[in-house]
Length: 543
Image (cartoon, rainbow, N blue to C red):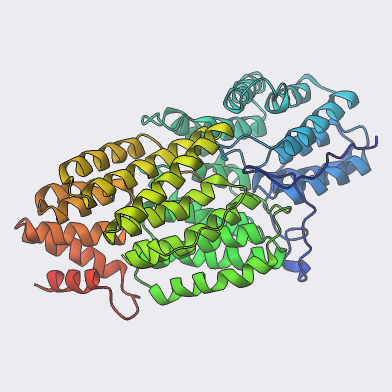
């Protein structure tokens, strides 16, 4: 049956229609032909099409969406009546389920077309009909039903399918994925994540080479209190699908959550190399952003500087109309903004942060990164006018995000604006008002969760509370703020340095030495010139 191809638009939000993947020159290391794990998804399609179907599902489980689409299209060539291949194409068109952004009209049209094709072909069993009906929830009535409602409807449909098909492990796996992806960010019991993780852990012993099980365990536990539960899966996933850039990157989500910085660096080097081979600039930049973050936490500033210096060359290869696998093109724009912002802020170079030049893009939450860095840099430099200008820009970006129905990112922009307003009050001498505002912003940030696009907040608001309290000569309270930050963001350089200094000023020499020693240990590869905070921490640790 001929396929209807939706027009390919320049993205306006986080997801774009999937482009045909660029071919790697070394085919033995290519996603197209290399090892991607073992999956068996039983279908009623022709037997000769089953191997191609299984490989396409394996690619789908590693979020290699363009390659998965090619795989399902090859299934249709072998069996033009295989409705489940159209199900796979629809799933692939949806893209990364952990993206909180509404899908573009192009994506919604492409997915709806695949669903319509599946229904025209006709599912041959009630089980297969259940899969088609479930994925249809993501694309049906998109003009009138909001994104979140459709995501929850898909989750509920998959839950019902898994209950009706208890022997179908793939139904269980996709249900667990839907639970983790739809988990409310404000639910700090993490009930859905724990349920998803338990479902996946119940299967992994029997299917240790299944890419989806390791991958989704990492996602299910990608929140601070649960992250260490994913360490075994994180260390296994890259070996299951070693040619897939996302499989190589994904372990760094767990490594970042537990503060295992060198492991994060190593796996993102491998991911970036694989992404470059595949021509996936978005995946390359995504790995680069996480890698930069890890370098900065370990005071490897020269290596982080190389990441910043690499951006102009990468930009020459960036094409906004192309998507990678899990990382859509908006991920590139986020990384372009975040990497230089991190380099300035994490090192306390407030003048450099204030001097950053915004690069307006179609992605407002990426633009907000630069303005947020400028706001903090201006405020910490004592520039009230610059802080106020950045606040106005953030307010405008929030309005734009609200208009685009980007609920999650609109809330993040409001947190950023609130932090800037607190520092403005502080700069203008209204110190108690500034502290109260910053604490309120930190409370807002604590009630949400980070998006997968970023290794963490650009500068955690709770950590900034600690730094403001130090400037107000309240070290005991500052220590509490730094310790609260470290519970959520372990081994963060500025939080450890702040905790060590605050403890010393508060007269708690034991804690000052302990936090100083922790900082010295994570910075064993630190390069010169040594950051003042590290030099001070080393002195405290040596006493």
